[in-house]
Length: 73
Image (cartoon, rainbow, N blue to C red):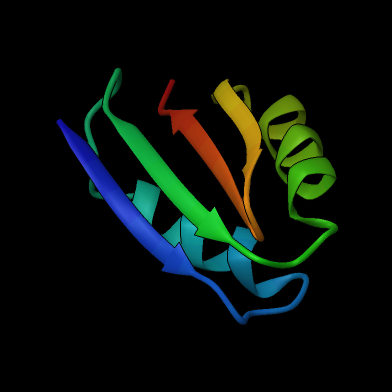
């Protein structure tokens, strides 16, 4: 299963906090795609995944948006 979280316009730490909440009901192996505009989001999600054990599947810029895909462990 895959879910999407629109975190555009939110500043650190809100994208990560909202992603953490959105990941809770997901099963292991499910993914969450986060769309963010905060320039610190890519680094924040690298650190979040390293700390939680979640997998960082993708972390790329697309225009003004950052597309971050996290796989729940």
